[in-house]
Length: 537
Image 1 (cartoon, helix red, strand yellow):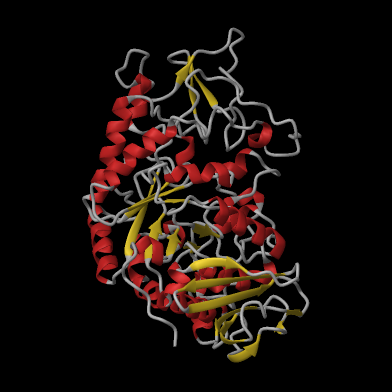
Image 2 (cartoon, rainbow, N blue to C red):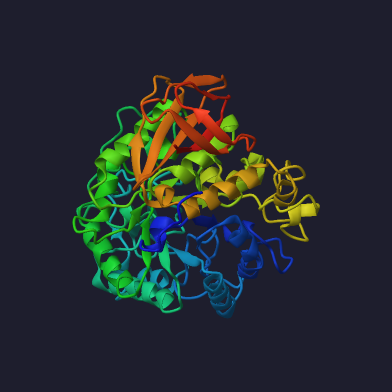
């Protein structure tokens, strides 16, 4: 019998976050695009699965150049997704089902159609001119410095009307806000309050580490290892455009607003090495509750690299900081695809859901969804369209959720905004619900075990040495309860010696779903790509 979980910890420490990309989750009105009522219709499924919180990617009014990450109004809902009342109804039902709702907040940039920017570009004397970052050209007319866009090319766009460049670290239609301006700070903090007052339980804050840039607009240091065959975003080290010291003061102000409300969470999107990432907790734990940890995404998916990432992170975390883990999202290749994990896809889910810290799942990962196959001439992703042949297309990880084997995979009654992956007839929720040992059933049981075990959702992490480079093993310990997790990343059977832990253990779950009962730990046999959770006896 697994020990019962305690309710003494914040919900974001014991729960599991599930990212919904709303355009691709469920279409309720037959326009080929997912919406809020579609999410609402699938809440029973998410509750059945065992999800604690739903992170919804942007649903604000937007021209959709970057599919919602170009916001034109921070305090409303895009009609494509529904109405404000639809959102309030969804939030109420999520809460009635004892789950939480997390919104995406996009503070680094707005749409170029936002009223603020339309005023800012109207003249150099407009009161909102300095709500954005403008600069004169160099004497030869070229951009002010060497800053580059994540979507390709210069990060500066020339405005003929006012004779200056404006900064955009992403698409030219996404001008960067000037967070050094007090009116920008005030208005953005009020936008947070707007949603908190409507019941939102927290925010995932987009590229939070980019909000402040070098005040003198000095060049980023060129990357000496860059070649033209690589994306231009890698041509500099971004030492003037990211992770600036002053950004922490802005995040502290955001956290003050979050803390005005009970039990709310702030999660920061931060692509930085661990030594820098951990500073976003704040010296007094007054910044992000969870600075997103992308270590499992950024390393090769093998036992040595993953073990190293986990142990390094655990070692560097400040005492009292709560860890978190991510395997995929709307910007990254799906974990089940061959270039990421392939045959180790089940193993990856066991890893995610048994490490110490809050896990974030991406929609469809619970059925092993893989990258779609969208031809380059059909790309909608601005990042891929701006650098053809170089940039990974994020469209491939945003294909519609595969609910069943009907036309359009049960996502919509019409042709979806992105094509459904071709494997949907065999890889879908309905089929896997009926299969005893399916990917879905494994993830569902993993979530149930995690929810019922304090050792898993809040126990200590202890690395276990065993002598095999292809196997990762660790303990999760709470009081007298010890759980041992062993993961074989190789395509060969492995026998490992875990006798330093105990003589015997009881297998609670195998990734193959066909193994239970007692086993010896001196010669634990793991099949190729098998992972097991064991209760130490």
